[in-house]
Image (cartoon, one colour):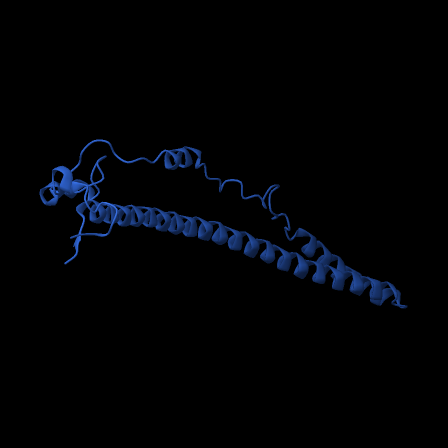
Length: 176
């Protein structure tokens, strides 16, 4: 019959619990990273959409202006002076109306910068580098089975052999 040593069982359990804690930290960091990247992407899309809208407006305005210039050139080629004068009044009105359309909305200088999305994790990184086992003794309920500095469970001493028998079989998996 093989009996697992309490030390080995406790050690295995503590390693598993430690791995679960760190996996939970990794998961939290990945979640937060995903949220922040999405925020940057959303603002990028909003800004790109705004710039595309401005490009479309300017393109339409340019097209209208080009047609007016073309019409003005054709009117200047009119051989009859009376027809030219009639057309020129109408063209001047259209040119004046077109020039009054405000095309002043444009991105402000630095619109492309996304510097406001900066994260300072220096303090957090330092805190992570100094993660250590707790030295004060907490019960299982306080740490979900992650006991203080002794690395064992509360109450695990009850099953441990005492004296020289405690060392027998310490190298192997089982006590006989």
